[in-house]
Amino acid sequence: MHRARKRFGQNFLQDSGVIYSIVAAINPNPEMHVIEIGPGLGALTRPLLGGLEQLDLLEIDRDLVAYWKAENLPGLNVIEGDALKFDFFEWAKSHASSGGVCKVVGNLPYNISSPLLFHLVSAANLIDEQVFMLQAEVVERMVSKAGGSEFSRLSVMLQARYDMELILEVPPEAFDPQPKVNSAVVRMIPRPDFSLNNAQWHALEKVVAAAFSQRRKMLRTNLSAYSERLCLSETELKARAQDISVDRYIEWAKELAN
Ligand code: SAM
Image (tube, rainbow, N blue to C red; front, side):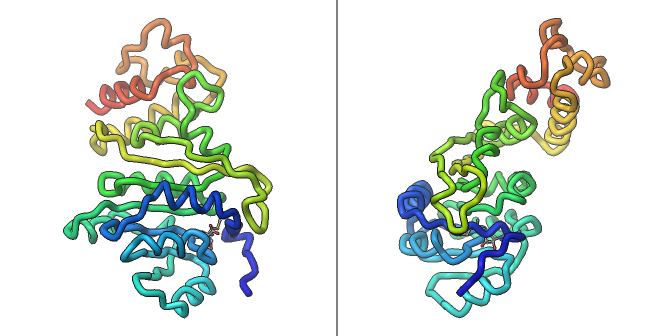
């Protein structure tokens, strides 16, 4: 019997309706390449495997790695490792020649969700879709639009790279043990119109971090270091970071990287 480990954010999914919705969002087929982050005891793993020929599992907990290796299910490839260090680009590249779309799925440990989302950005041009269970508050920020109270640095950076959709809100009762917070499932699809090169992406990171550095301050203050290189209108100078659209931040990043 496995005892849930807090340090690995282990809240195991119990609710069959929620499990069904996540598997339906992935819509597995035999040609698809899927990696599941943190399979735990397999709430998602087993139903996913039903629709796939192959499924890669990435798990940090040695006991769970041993459990899955002992299960020895056909089509299952068990990788012991930390998702924050795993090379998702190489993983997707290794499947590129055989065709079929690449997807990443997971009921993620909440303590690593933001760094993991940023880590995955580096593989976004090879990964077709990501479906994740996250803390509801994080998903709200991910999908929030300019002008909304939750619109933040996370919203801009992830919306610059992905189209995102809230699929389902999930209460604590869906898990064992129950987390203290609400959860939500989000779908992330890399934007087909994404056109930033590395220098422009870094410029975006910098200008967005500066803009949101003091949420209550006007951009006249927060972006003063960039005022000579960016043509901010009078309205923009008086605006706050949360009022500026993602596309406008992208324009600024392109101007700065010129
Ligand atoms: N997928 C299972 C479910 O839905 O019941 C378990 C989800 S549980 C919230 C998170 C899982 O991620 C656990 O299996 C945990 O051991 C694993 N995990 C935690 N940190 C990890 C990391 N850095 N890299 C890979 N797996 C991790």
